Image 1 (cartoon, rainbow, N blue to C red):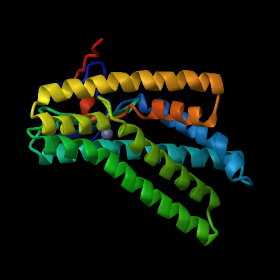
Image 2: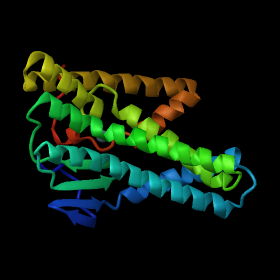
Image 3: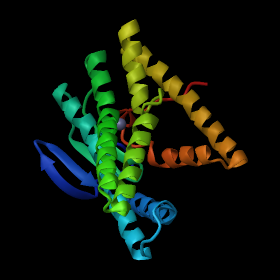
Length: 245
Ligand SMILES: [Zn+2]
């Protein structure tokens, strides 16, 4: 797997044992969108604060969510390196984190572990944010901080669930590939199966998006939100899958 075309490295945060962690300027777009969205909804859920406080809370929540997206990608990278696959770079950009892998999993088990690491970390983060929100809420102080933490808990859970949808190039697609590989013993055939599932999933999401336009429902809005936030990370994005018609 090679560099993903079209994404520059951006601001380098650090280098650890041959792994470069960087942030592309386009992250500012999602931070702004998350901050704007959060600052707009907090006054309804947690009234009684100034406009500036909502924006500050929104900005903090958005930056923390960006950090959580990076952590998700780093989880893929750490497990991949443990499986003996070099990972020269993890970059956070407009659509989340990308771990660039310089090799392939050697076994279905490695493929599964690499793919599951990101959603697993997002679920853990969701639990941590939920616990912190509960602690703050029951303490009676910092209702605004508790609301932001609760939002982060939901966002990370949505991120994990969306990425677990069973179609390449999402993490769930990699897990499906690991399953098919183990079952049939053919990694190439498994990749094609996961890619085909990804195509079906794509059409389903487009269908749901159209349904959302028709219904303008809350659920549809959530799907639109995760569609924007989700396509994220995924080691699988480094590989090009081709839809078959
Ligand atoms: Zn992932």
